[in-house]
Length: 140
Image (cartoon, rainbow, N blue to C red; front, side):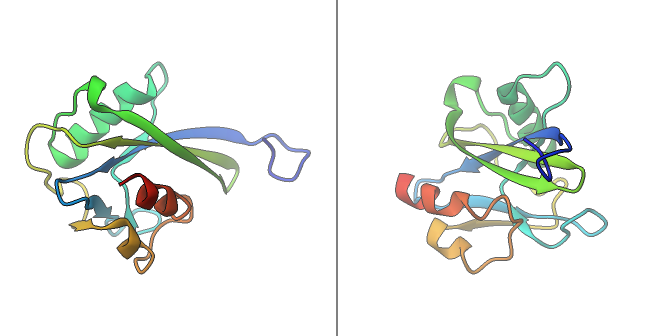
């Protein structure tokens, strides 16, 4: 993958989760001030660290960001998004889960919000998250 077909982009693997409740709503978190894309609504998750599998990274991120535990077996790969991000190229892997332990809390985000996928179109979201809405709507 390249930025301009001549300069290879560094790949930035990121994982995210669509936590789905019993009413078919998905949990979104609002990015805090001081971070890039502050104020936008996104799926919880984060960067895959060197040596981590995507699933291990997502389990770690959900514990750090929301204070919840998600068993590896409850993470279902759903889709991905790909987008340029400065000198890097973002590869966002989205998983769906309907089972977790604990009550999600905004430990790093400004706020949390449960929304139906169709309602996400009206929210300000990062460019890489937007293409995932239609698939989530079809899956849920």
